[in-house]
Image 1 (cartoon, chains in turn purple, red):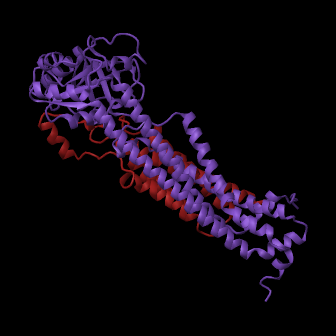
Image 2: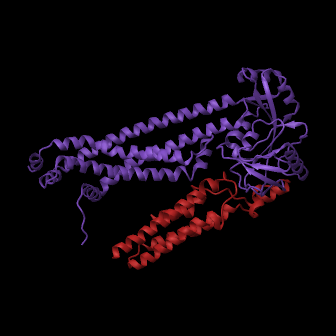
Image 3: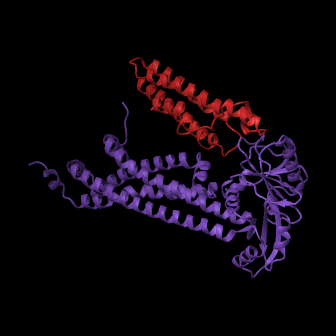
Length: 404
Length: 143
């Protein structure tokens, strides 16, 4: 026969095990709270990370694109939606002449229709290594040499290995490096220098593959990245570019990031309000349940008092029970949230249509600890009122209650 | 629980956790006539890789669902343990199909990688967990 030391913890465990239905309902309430707390915090952290990442990796103050192509540009940058558009190369020189423009760098975009690396089309971004100030600093985080002709650097979400090859438009290109994850559309693109892009363009055109526009790549570019001189506002320079050059649209990075930041702010505020509301509702509901069940258990408490339980020990028993229920609910909720937010993070990012970069493990552990601490505390806090009430009751009165 | 999990494995890739849309052969021929090439024929001929994963999972899911129904038949504990072991092994099989036996498409942002693959792995792991728990429960009760 098994023997147990009948400690407070053991009695509390047996009590909640005995009342399975009540325990499950209370734990479910805490589970909903911890699910929302953990899932919500990871979600907002990931969005904030994505925003930080895009601000640090874009490097340009303005992006000038052909008129009406601003949405396609944002799609490429934020959601990895492949697209291409072109205007005349002379636009870059015209932009350089505008007051307040410090540097410009042109880019050329192509969309793959078939690739060894990818079952879906990817964006191929060509840049000029001599003028580029946006992509190369980012590339230098993982690749220190100069990118040669017919060499590609791939975004973190492209499936290919370093020093392997990828096939674009039936031509093989060497992959020299993989970029760090940014949580933006740039993770789904491949990068090459101007000559590599021209070669891909010509091959695609010769083979009649894909939707290649009838353009002379020597005279065309897709966008011009603009770095401003100190003291000039993006708004003023953007207005000057729009007025002086026909057929262009200026995408202001500050404006684009600002609108993402304000959307993020709304999501964060709503989520925090929801969590606070959920904590209050859980506290109230659990407090009512504890109070009602304590009323039903008066005789049990009186019996425990009569066999030597002090008031302090009785209070400890109730608090331990509430802690066990909270802990079970908290762990289940956090585990359920982890099953949703980590494996499905790409789907969540895609659904939100915003830069989404999952935080590092240190942050995840921090969020986990905070979520569990709050969830674990909810039960004992909700039980506090009942504990105080039980502690004040006389044994004799409790024993007599319900006899008549 | 096992029955529900296996129905999810069997029908999930065709419904709530969809794999990439398959390509009809007639559509493929049409696009070839137009002189364009699609991504799909480059990978496995007429279908993307995840299509075969979905078909395999449908078979595995249905087999485990039938085994789950067998657990409802009055029988000895040994029978239940044997069936549960079979379910656990099939659960491992369900996990291995999208991960390394057949795999999914190469693009991390394709539907099969964002939804079907993680879903199938989770359902497969749950199947293993529930079966192992049941085997241990039966073993403990038998003692």
